[in-house]
Image 1 (cartoon, rainbow, N blue to C red):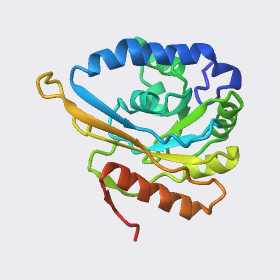
Image 2 (tube, rainbow, N blue to C red; image 1 turned 90 degrees about the horizontal axis):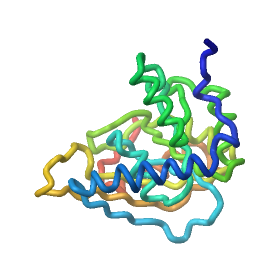
Image 3 (spheres, helix red, strand yellow; image 1 turned 135 degrees about the vertical axis):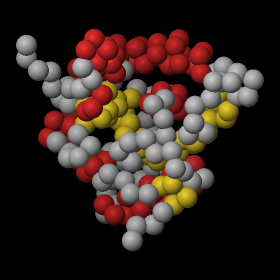
Image 4 (cartoon, helix red, strand yellow; image 1 turned 60 degrees about the vertical axis):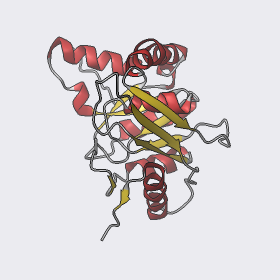
Length: 220
C-alpha cells in the first residue's frame, strides 16, 4: 500500500467540505459540550482585512485548534505535528482521517520541509487562513520563551502578515460544571511579513505575552 504524504495537500483539498466539517466539529460537537465547563471570551481585531492571514497562537491544550476556529470565524488550515499521523492501529487511522478533514496537514517540528512550504502556498491559493503554533508543542508554564522560527519563513514565502493570538485559561482541564473556568481568546495587531526575521519574532513574543498575561522570557 502506498504511503500517504500527510504533509502535502493541495488547494483543492481546502474547500467548502473542509469548512462544513469545521462548523460541524465546532458548533455541533465542541461548543455544546465544553460550554458546560468553560466560559469563552473572544476579543477579535475588527480592523483585519479580508485577505488571508497567518494566525499564530501560543499553545496550551489539545483544544487550541477548535478555539482558534471559534475566535477567527474564518476558514482555517492547521499545521499538526507529524507524530499525530504516526499513531498505529485503527485509532491512529481515525485520528489522521479526521484531523485531515478539519484542514490539518503534517509538519516536521525539527525541520521545515519542502512539502510543508508547498502546502502552505496552496492554503493561500484556496483563500484559507493558516493557523500555526510557533512554540512547537503544548506549553503550560505560562511563559513565552523560545519559539520555532519556521512560521516566519512560511510568512515570507506566502507573503502573508502574522496575527498574534493569545490563549489563556485552559492550562489545566476542568470537568466541574458548577465551577466553569473562563478561557480568554485575544487577537493582536498584524505583524508585517516584510520585517526582519528577528523583529517578527520579537513582536510576536511581546504581543502574545501581553495578550495572555504570561511572563515574557528574553533570549540570552
